[in-house]
Length: 351
Image (tube, rainbow, N blue to C red; front, side):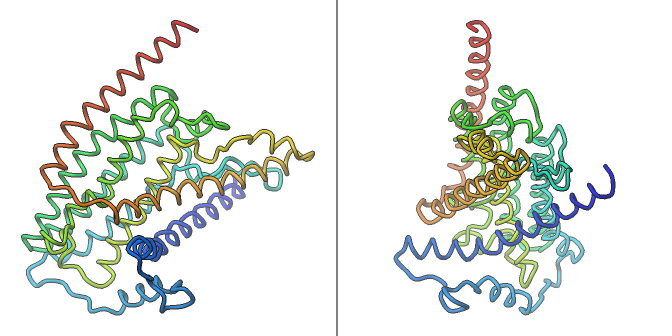
């Protein structure tokens, strides 16, 4: 990789990082607008036209609020907790292919920050570190309610990571690769994995709600029981970083689901659109840019679904949450693996 390729890659990484932060910022706005629509209210409408500057107002409020650290807290870990949560969330999107390939100045530029043949393992490894940010924050606060929230977060994330990992094994059996780019390329056109793995997708979706601590799985920060959970003692931008990390995680998990099950940047009649251009370079670039738009449309659809569910379903009890993870989702994921293996063997036998 020469210096020009490095410059292209650096620009792409900065663009994706900026888009990630922008989407996470305005997710707070759209969540309140969606909640207002469901509850027959207006929602944010004061800061800017239609309230579009509300996220900036919230950021300003968090920046200028009093910075408070409890006297008995472990100050180093108290500061480190939200930093870990934010860092891990921001690293997760590095291996996600948001588009295919652009041809710029005769060079092939892949719209993916890092292409590694263990992309799925990378995401699981990085995301699993996020629980340390919650656990450290809850423990360092020296508050029993914060610690209870942190323990809930750790046990919930560990429980549902098992089912999520098992649900992915079936997709990996079909693709034969851990590379997200390879998995995306195998779903060209309308050959999406959702048609072959509906049960696996349903398990992954439920686990995604639990991993992002979203309703009906928001037990780590259930205000009615734990007065805020693991971030009870946090204020100012430290609290903002925890909340921001949650929205980044929603964006990342939506991108992962779009890639693994809904064809990533692929859409029907891609080749027809590509062949409609006499210039192959122009045709390739147009198809790639349309694919990027399709990818983000899928991501936004999942983000809307996360928000819709939050204002529709009640919260689980904690015993119900753990029972669902261990007694229902894990056996279902194992059954899905067996069914997928049987289907692969039957296909090889018949064809």
